[in-house]
Image 1 (spheres, rainbow, N blue to C red):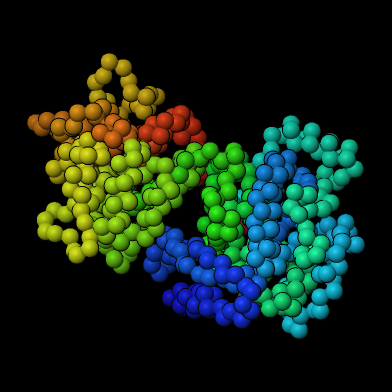
Image 2 (tube, rainbow, N blue to C red):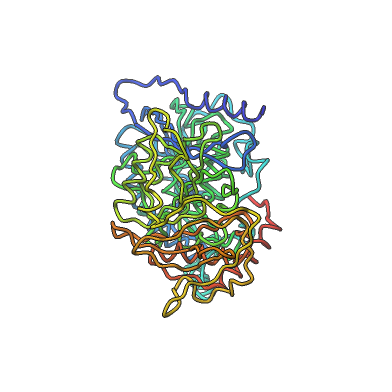
Amino acid sequence: MWLRIAKSLAFIVYWTVVASAGDCSELLKLSLRYQEPTSDDSPRYHRLTLQDQWKSDQVAVIVCDMWDSHHSVNAVRRAQELAPVIDAFVAKLRQQGATVIHAPSSCMPQYQDHPARQRALQVRPAAEFPEQIAQWCDQIPSEQAVPYPLDQSLGGEDDDLDELRRWSEQLKAQGRKPREPWLRQIDSIHIDPGQDFISDSGQEIWSILADRGISQVMLVGVHVNMCVLGRPFGLRQMVSGGKSVVLVRDLTDTMYDPRAWPYANHFTGTDIMIDHIERHVCPTISSDQILGGDEFRFADDDRLQLTMLIADDEYKTETTLPEFAARHLSQSFRVTIAYASDTQRNQIPAIEDVLSADVLLVSVRRRTLPIQDLELIRQFVKRGRPMVGIRTASHAFSLRSGQPEPGSGQWPEFDQQVWGGNYVGHFGNELEYSITEAQHDRQHPILTGLSDWSSFQAGGSLYKTAPLAPGTTELLVSKIADQVPHPVAWTYVRADGGRSFYTSLGHVDDFRQIQFQSLLSRGIHWVCGLPLPEVSTIETQNVRYASGKGKQRADR
């Protein structure tokens, strides 16, 4: 509890920076994103935003290690793609009166005569420095109780090994050191000789901030799991020194190799690090808040955004679904999770993620949401977007009896309209039932290659779902002795043209079985029109993920 109180006090100090700049300063209207536990000591986090205003002439933007070369050829390619957007970002801030500091570490000899370097050297040293400002910082106290989220122990290079060898030879031919080939900052980021600063020294940069009365700092550049966090001028040191600091989350990259734990897409690795930073280090902003338009996204990042709504306190999907997503969705999807409030039953903070989602997964049980929140889901469905539901999603937004509280609404037709279902209750928990594939002329793609369902042991009671609506395709059916069969999994092409996949499975015990994991993963991919993962791939990922998690490293 004391840690939560301390963090709350820190945030109060963080958000209450007193502006003292002159009238020439512009107000930067920022949406600062951060994450906090759903309750004390919870491993789940709400992703929240705070609207704030910073005076531009009290802001510094630090460009971290945007070098002209790198030992990873893929890192070079991403830096070349990222650099023009960083250039536009710092140019806009420079125009608005912000201070721009270029920090290409280990490259100061190349700039010894540059006016921006001389300007940094001429700044009077600060009267006081944070104790460790000259050193690399591996972690700050708020990170100590949590494991590091990525295995970067082998350096994080995600290159093809043959291409990496050829790149190393090319660097040698250029007279560069293959492991440290950087000489200067990349040319596509302009350094203004009349205004900017160049330094890679924590003390020099701290002195620049002190000399200019700067209390608010933005960090852009690479790599977020290494230099952006750990440099003497990085996020951790700025936070430790008491600055109000934000990471510009779309103007960074990660040194992460998907062949290392947690075996995720490279860009998912970056998202994992951003989650860590928003939870334990500092808030983030996005570049469009300064530049307008859309957030920057790498051309190779073709993941779809899958948003999970989790508000089910009966089947533990707040635990099973995030673990499932980490194991099986991290390659094709950018997963965001909106958990229900632990204190207000009918509130789902971060439900606004639905606005940017490509596909929505619902694990909600009998919640009546604020009318405007329920409307977000209605509009998502109306646009014909893919929908996935498990277990209690058949009665997600309806009450058994009574009326919603004022300002809230329900959607009793959700089951029929979105899933094509007909939920009318369930059989007793003590009744056993078997599952078989529905009879079709040919096997549905979702079921192709799945194991024999006769070995599957369902963890929960059988839902009464028959008969389904026209437009549905039954995948799995189940039967209790002397009862009519009831569908257990099916697809549905909705009236709006969108694809839905629903299964009444989803008990915590179901998630432990490869048949259910495969069914759900393939169902999600199917509604999105993506290639379906092989069952063998899902099995392999289970083994790799569990093994890697078991020996998770704390390297920073």
